[in-house]
Image 1 (tube, rainbow, N blue to C red):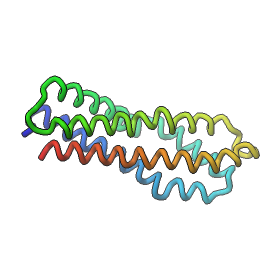
Image 2 (image 1 turned 180 degrees about the horizontal axis):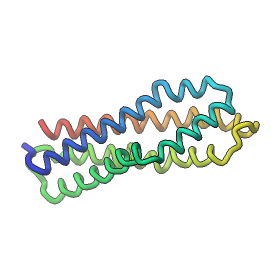
Image 3 (image 1 turned 90 degrees about the vertical axis):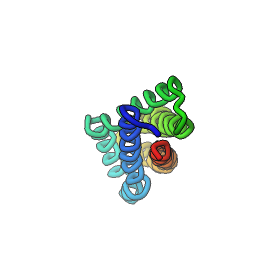
Length: 159
C-alpha cells in the first residue's frame, strides 16, 4: 500500500485532477451550451472574458500545479516502482498530462487565441464562433474525461 509522502502526493493528485475535471465538466455540460445560445457577438465577447479570467491565479494554480504533481508522480513511480499502484499511477499521470494539459495546449488555447484576436461584432467572428463552439467543446469533452479518469486512476492506486 502507498504510504507516507507518496500517499499525500497521490491524494493531492486525486484532488487536483478531480477539481480540474469539475471545471471542464461545467463547461461541457452547460457553459458552452449557454454561450452558444447567445447572439455570436455576445458569445464571442463572453468567451473572451472567460478566457482572460481563467488565466488568473485561482484556476491556473490548480491546473498547472496538478500538471506538475502528475509529472512528479510519474517520475517517482518510475524510480520507486512500487509493488502496488504502479500501473494506476502511471496511467493517471499520462491521462492528465496528455489528455488534459496537452489537449489544452495544442487544441483549446490556440482556438482561444484566435477568438481573442477577433472583433466580436464582425461577420468573421460570427462565422468562426460556430466552428469554435463545436471544436472547442469537443476537445473540452476529452479534457473532462481525461481529468476524471486520472482522478479515478490515482484513487485506485490508493486502494
